[in-house]
Image (tube, rainbow, N blue to C red):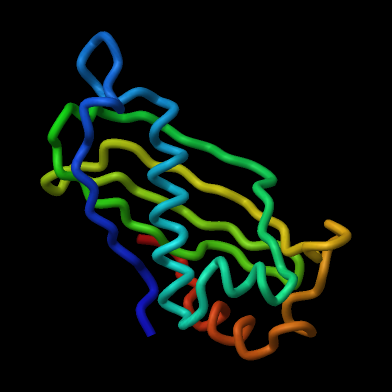
Length: 141
């Protein structure tokens, strides 16, 4: 099973700021798109998880901006699973352009019941999914 997902995005004009570079607020949106594609590698979608009563609210977000990305740059967002417990999951991201790391970040999410928003144990509720995610854990790039 793949451990790293790669999503290609072409930077849009609407995502730029007055300096002509991609605005810092865009990177979390790119992370979300990349995370959604990563989850699909398990054979289940975010919407299916939500229909099954499990949500993944954001608990923390970190992004380090290393180099600017400009309009029409074709970047690749690499996503990997970096931590997993019964109640939490962490994804790590790298925004790449022609072999250079432009930005890197991470998001931490909790597994919660969609009706109560109380934490749930993913291993008990979805043991097959938890097993798949465990196999996808990586120790680094």
